[in-house]
Image (tube, rainbow, N blue to C red):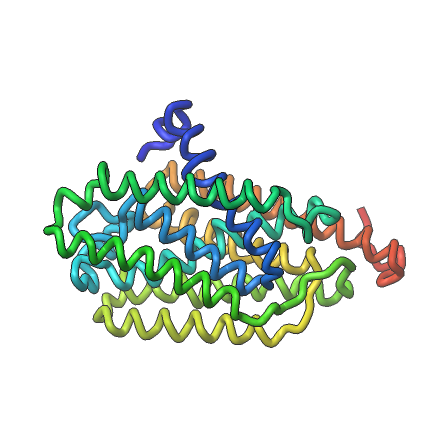
Length: 315
């Protein structure tokens, strides 16, 4: 979809409110009431991925238009794009839910650990947004017109069943790392950023290389993605506690890597000027946000005695 079409009021407002804003708010409320850690929050983000890619845009299903042509016919089983699902659902967990929630909690630390909505309002929003998405998929979705009845019902059951599994797993995952207030030591502040960049490279750039460059068989892609995701979650789960600023720097590291590699670099290699320019803008936004987080870290360190004024970078 061209950017000019997306930012039309008739497209932008419904998308940001109903397709994105309300479901993300509901999942944030669920995570806060259940006191899930970042890993559980990421797992709930995959429910949003199923909501978006399964019920709304329907990219999980062949032969509908894929969001990425490289995954169009790769690993299609019963009309389901298995490698694409294993790629895009963790992506949504990281970028659609974990990133905005961690950054918002950093900006508003006093409200970070408290629900923003009454429990009844949360349930009502969940029922309305989920019910409308299911109704759209069943009565007006594209997939219903290209699948036989049994396959269509299988797809609906797969999306709803996977969402239920993701919810149960999110509630059972360890509540680590524990995110708390405070500042990191100056020498350790860039480690979360580098870790986020490394995780993105392993999870997503590695998978893209296998699919688009190596053109590996789809079972190899599925195995690599599964092992990479599990290994990344295991590494994160070994961290007992972290600060809000460090958690924000982690997701900013992942986002900066995506903007620099998937958007900017690929745009340059493909000769796509708009994509390359978008990459420059996204990198600048991520780095600008990172600078603000580092500055906030420095102030927090001075206030709690973690660092002395002499440790701060000179202007």
